[in-house]
View 1 (cartoon, rainbow, N blue to C red):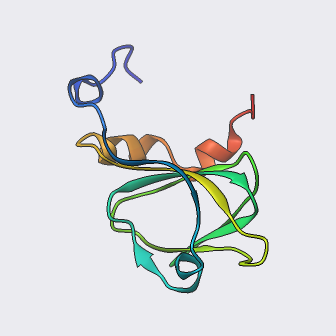
View 2: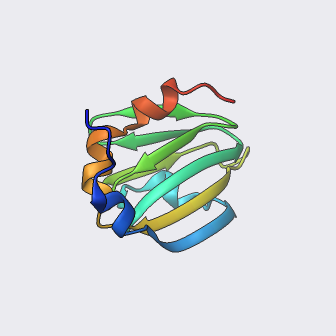
Length: 113
């Protein structure tokens, strides 16, 4: 691995399309939908399964997941319990290179601190 950061990561910052806390609507749990931009989902309250065509990832309070733009997915959760998420949707020219190096497995392996 190189000691210098690839210029694509420093020359083009992510453009945030939407950011904030939201209580998810059950429609996101019922139907597969493509991510309009790249997404960061951080669970504040509740539990969910991030369901894609080839994987199911369980998330609870304090857990974070990434969804690449265009990825069909469902945010499955118990509608009675609800789901409170810190949500960020973004565009970023460097995202394809970033996702080659960072995955949800990478994030899950990080120390919670």
